[in-house]
Length: 158
Image (cartoon, rainbow, N blue to C red):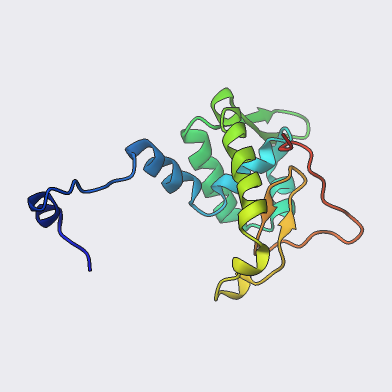
């Protein structure tokens, strides 16, 4: 049974709340694809098409997430006027600052979240766990590993 904050205060119990900064971090990184994109860009600059192929994400969602990450100051968009014109995305200093947290989260997930415990009701979440080439585990993403390519732990290994 849940108590209202007023009832808890009347009994001498302080209501508990998550730290506001941690709550913002989970809200931002928990948005589908944001954390995976940051983890992928740890390997270095990547173009739109390369990210789309590697993650199996739609154009519109990838575009939205890259704009959001750019506005947050975590990703930088660079245009090479060419020819041909090329756009690449890379982590900023603030984006690179998340690397230790992603490493710790990766280690925790490997130790505490076996793939079979993470399967959801949605069919997209029923695929076996895959490891991105940067070491982040990808559970249930729509892209499949290319045949003959083995995952590596480069980029996030401690």
